[in-house]
Image 1 (tube, rainbow, N blue to C red):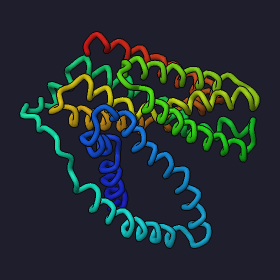
Image 2: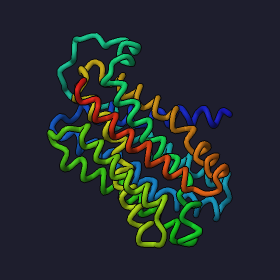
Image 3: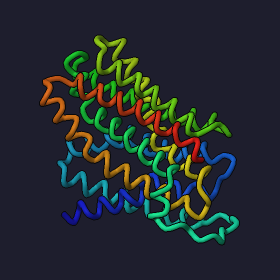
Length: 286
């Protein structure tokens, strides 16, 4: 239990809200690009670190591998954090007092951000948790694992394209387009058969994976006062994490009840389409 508590605290300190708070003050015009690069660091870390972790665990055992990783993190990450994160940009300080959390929670523009991305991430995490089990019977274990890597690469590509081309475009419309692209991918994964169709589903789904984390801070920065942005992003992140924590169990329950993943993946597609409609509906409040 102490390890879980410490891990949870560390996760919160390195979540989307924390990354936004660290990166955003340094950038204004290039903020989408900067946030995309910062979030891509987590994706690239996942690509590199997971095989390394598995190799260490296989070679030395789980406990020694965990000890080696912990020591390496302290030796490498702590000096970097002390050197880099203590620096602060010179920015104009907002004198406005932040709104109370309850006042923010009642605002329609906040509700449409929070609900849309909570539904989108619920669908995304639930689908991700069961994707190998869905693909393995048709593709085999090797190609199914490769499909997960493909999705991760597509997530990096999608987020990079978002940062490069978002500019002054409407973030809500971009979010809706990303969610609808994932909807199409989820439908292919639910109904498709054979490598070409399932691969296309993975690509469409993967291109939107990273954007669901990157876009809420960008929308918040355009629609809320500077004094409230940090609170808004933290609340959205906390609500999202609370909601999608139940996704793997619920998708698995649907699989056991219906005897296949068809209904689970169709539910994911429906939730993504609903999330797209909700985030667009918030434009009239922005």
